[in-house]
Image 1 (cartoon, rainbow, N blue to C red):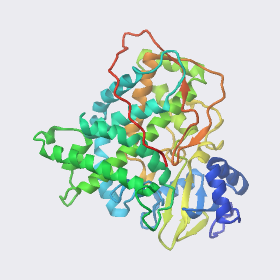
Image 2: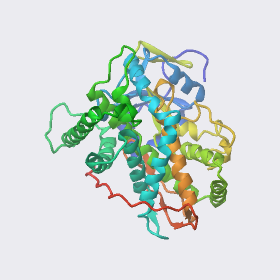
Image 3: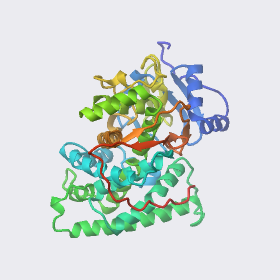
Image 4: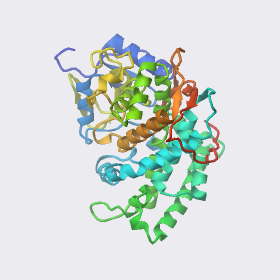
Length: 453
């Protein structure tokens, strides 16, 4: 790259519509092609994001993450447009800092250990319904496990409201992830339009959560509860004020939506990967039997490197300009971090095309090279919870089941709107192991899906 300062890096000169079609039709391949054509930093012009600079080098990724919020705000559009004005995705600057400070404590420290048994219970409950020695797609099952686990962690109990949320949220999440990248119409097109239907679902969610908030506030033992709802209702900003009930609802839907689909999808990818690497699978089973976890943790990191569920994140330039390496990015541009590109970079991860968890055994990845949770002040506050949840599910799966290996080609990436999932849902054939630790938990009724957009 030239040492002189220029405005923006090179990129295609095709009309925005043409670039947008390529981006929508095959985002991963388009981004990789442009990286190969124009270098590790390039400019694109696409609908929604507009003129955008894509960065794929760790040094520039670090610079993006460290940039002041006075210079660059969160990437827009983002999930905040479907999660609410009070969602951490939507907040900027001081408001974001204040809210994040209240959200982080429930997902760190000793509280995390209390959730492990909840996650194992939900795994066993779902696994009781799995077909014996018959191939099936695991993605839906992982969605059930992570949704039930996050519901219990957030609300701390069972009841009619929880059954209603189990029915509402799976379809809502799928619906919202597609609408997150669809322009919002200027006119109300009625209740049967996609946005009209979405608003109806949100009203239903708000009614359920409103009832739960009222019950929590009336609970004489609220101070003794350790679920997220109880902690948010009791938390206070630095000035002593409490979160509004609307903001509590927005943050709860953020935790429920963002905290369950991405984790479930990563677990489906993990199963898809393991059955195609029998030597690694055998080592992981032996490690589980011996009570270890190092290789399993490394495997989780490698799954997230090779099969990132979210493949881009970024910032929007709001100041007059944003320095970025040798470039000066003007106001109004978006700066996108190409997650999948840096994860696939041979100069960053040697033999990047190989699925090799040993690269992370005894070695934690650099925060500007391995970025599935984003970074900086906007790094996912639930990252530690997600990692713990994946570890518990994989540990219990490998402890209680044998995965049948396969020589079939790996499943392709399939876009679910915001997230990338295995195209066939992470199909696998399982046999129950004869271990003393096998437990059976009565299955819950499966959640009914709402129609997708």
